[in-house]
Picture (cartoon, rainbow, N blue to C red):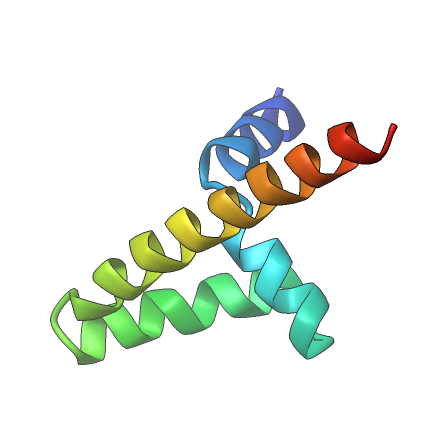
Amino acid sequence: MIDKIKDQLEKSAFGVCSYLGEKIGIASSRVRLYFIYASFVAFGSPVVVYLALAFWVNIRKYLKAARNIIWH
């Protein structure tokens, strides 16, 4: 039950933390903690950064999928 909830939250969180974790080479749970800590310290402004990164990751996935369709 807990694993299903965790998987659903990770899917609905746009995959930003896992994407950054893969690029940086650290665990996605560690990236999530950094976002949480930064939100407390900076009074919520990292949420704006997170949403901007989510938009960028989704656009990148869309462009990559479109590029693959052209070449098939």
